[in-house]
Length: 149
Image 1 (cartoon, rainbow, N blue to C red):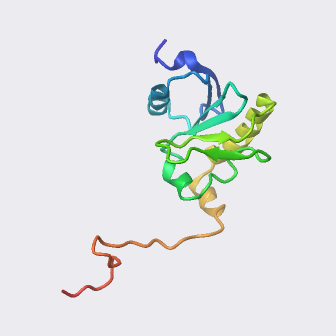
Image 2 (cartoon, rainbow, N blue to C red):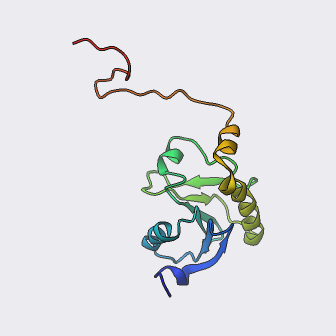
Image 3 (cartoon, rainbow, N blue to C red):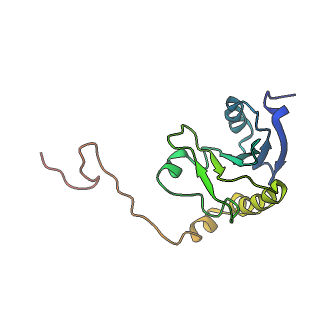
């Protein structure tokens, strides 16, 4: 055994981009796993049947979820998802138990695989809306705007 989290990993999928882990895996091991093996997601079926997906914060940071944005098309459709309010790490949870976890995992794999393998050109081309970058100084004045003292 090379890493302390290995006994909790049940299966690796999508060429190591998704790890399915035991729900009893200590949370600190999640961080070790993200640092060492760099999967995009750790997924687990909880004891009550809901699915918990912990994204690697390098790929889907907490502020993305808190700002009301959602990882488009990365989760299987037809399920309702929630996240923890005021949580300190992004965790996406199915709002209801998933009756067929194997089917859900296949759908999740199909959602993540194209995202994981796309080029920068494909990523940019798939974006339909753009937002202007607003850079400001600590003074509140936009960067590039002439400021006289």
